[in-house]
Length: 59
Image (cartoon, rainbow, N blue to C red):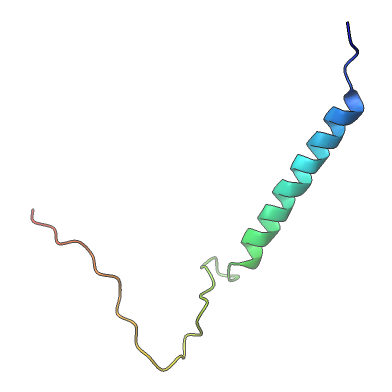
């Protein structure tokens, strides 16, 4: 029976952990400190954007 390759398993765990940390860092970099997402356009672009249309509710 073959012996388990613990070094390979450890390396795979390290890579997965590193990838997860990088994704978390990217998520944090794309948000403002107050928790809201960063807009691609500046707020003072000179145009007024209408709020997204909500579906009509007939209740």
